[in-house]
Image 1 (spheres, one colour):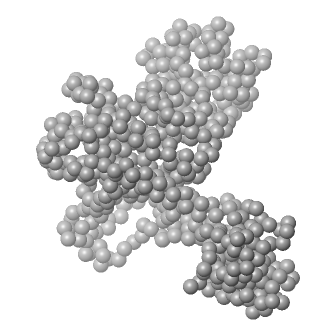
Image 2: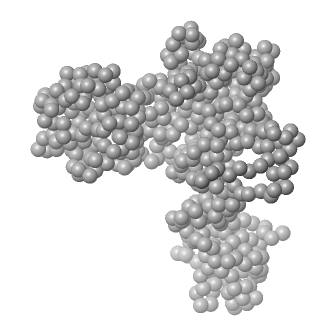
Length: 589
């Protein structure tokens, strides 16, 4: 065998042992006689000493190697001289004196430094991902991900859940995002779809009587990418029968509290998690996934604005809109350019603009000040809790636009001012989402969650008269400004499910074509059931302190959904297309 010990396990208790190590040359130092090599494997580093006096052949090998060579070493464990210990390493008390060595493979000079966690252009990192994954930062992330998944599996197994795999090749059904399609050779002209989630299968497993299911599920969605989104991602998919919303929230909260305490005990976390309705978070934070690590809440000043002499505010309220503001700490000295940037940020979210008030030592400075009395300005300052040195920012518009614009400003300014405690994990539940969203372009209702979500029982009577007022029996788990999980109590009654499909303008014929299997299954004793699907990529990114989920996925795609290492997507041979009865028609220029 190439190694009897790993490079991360030797301690002072192993002194005088003869061991074999194998790994990569992490760092080489030639002291003009003695050569010191830090040998690395996944488990850590061990310092190896090559002495020309006691082991000339091994020393000759040590003279040839360079960083990232693959090396096998045999030698004796010895205690480091007093004062030369390295407390930062588990192996820092010892070193191995090489008696023999063999180069197992050479290495070209890497395109970036591997033995340091320096910033490297992401395109280069993704092109040489197998080298990037050797770096300490990435190996820590991959090991953390492994421990998170293992904890989830063990914890759920102890509570009676069973892990069941569901198909990757399935049927294309509308679930919110575009499907990735796979042509079928056996059925020319027909396609499989890659699963956006195991949604229908996990419901069918409840009907099949498995009662507590989970899966570390791979999901694929053909959607535009961003820092927290990939075309293929992983979620903890779970479903339970004979449960209500409270049962699911309590179980998942208990799981994640236990997980954080085990794997990240130094992170701050308030328990129990707060719960908000959708209306509450939109009113206070302008987001359904608020970052609760800092304040700067949205404050409604519509009542003051209604009696204002400032027509921009007054007209917005009279038109059925509202005026809200945020108090930005210690930013009263923002320059004209910085204030204009805030106004443009608000406009990027649909607002007509924004109004600022700088609370300086010599008074209130605002472009709108000449249209307001001193008493009115004071009322705004008092309502927002402003202090000297703060900056107040207001948006007056339709309610949805006000929430989106101020919510965006809150997030951006919170990040710029570093208001959030990076060591905190601010979990919360958001419940009572709208059941439907109005699609203005197509003049129809869309499911806000997915079409299998149950409405609140007390709102079912509104389906015929006021669908926009119906609340869904759905819930989101949020943390630090990210949606980490979404779930719902599902429909288990055929008649109600058909009614929801009809509201979504899916007629009876298309219901049967797309969802006939589900509707029929509901007729064979479907139990009440529900579940949710926490995103593993996003959670591990938050836990590891990474801003991008690509840094916790072994082989991710870039922002254009390309694999730069494998050069995918790519052309395929014509005979493959012929076999599938496909023809490529390129878009016209």
